[in-house]
Image (cartoon, rainbow, N blue to C red; front, side, top):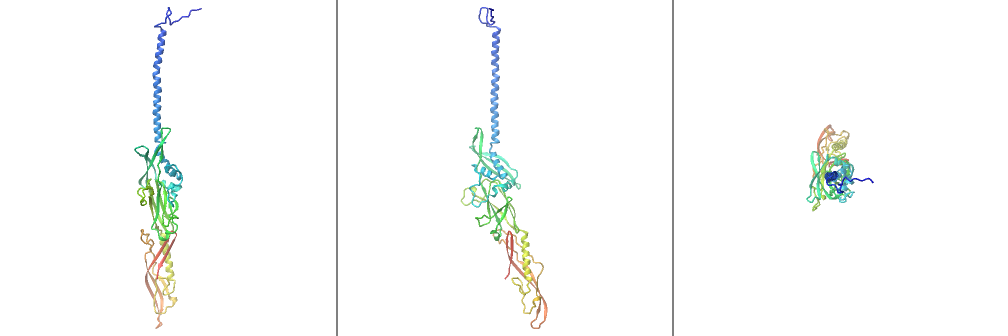
Length: 398
């Protein structure tokens, strides 16, 4: 059998102490020791970078998707889209949809949905949302919404509450309850006769009655979720009101007249006065009725026309066919503008006019006949009754 040579042993069979095989093994061992250091450093650095990147990602998500501003932005988006049910649910604090339960009887909900809601939000212009101060315990924070209406800056402050975390890292927020505001639209300088009839105004672009069925006095209360612009106008044949605006920009009724003894700020009611005025058609109709009244007087061929402010007395005989009444010039009535509350809401200035009578008189003694022209100044006072769709001019004569 051939002899097998062992280069790692001496001729006497002992292991070599300084052979090349020993050096190679030591070198290999040294190489293995050097490569372990960089590999572990790479894995440790990668883990640190992953943790750092994860922290940055969590912070980014918490300031965008899971930020308190997002809750307010969702609420504003629902208002802007006219999605009243969604907005009410977000504003309830507990996510309950539907009409707010705390509304007083007779409160109109026209401004909580659809086009009136869209119109009221559009009037706010561009909205800016920014985070305000946190509470000391960090459980809630303020979110400020800014906007400009008619060149004036306004803002609404919302409270957003932290309710926990999702996936251990992401903050969970909820919009605190947004109290529903009450805006009472009150027609002022309203003629008494108009108060008992239907009075329908344009409220944020839709027609809404200003007299609730349960109320005897004019005015209607509307529920509003802030922020919102309420714009009301009124136009009829004989009564009108220029558009009046109210900016509802607080989540509590700051500055509103609250009920006596009430400590709940949401119990207050904001008031929007709608100042009524006569249209030009009132004066035109009054004078048309005045013309008919005076014509009815001048058409009577008698010395003292019935129900009229003029007359003539004589002892002589008057042939009836000779009697002719007319008016000097063209008498025009002047309608007073609707005054401030407390004064007579409907009045016509006294009419100063002159009646002209032409007739023939026959002297009862001599039988002589002669023509007479009699001019009689008079003052005519009258009552005025105005409703949105009617005018009645009633002269006051003995």
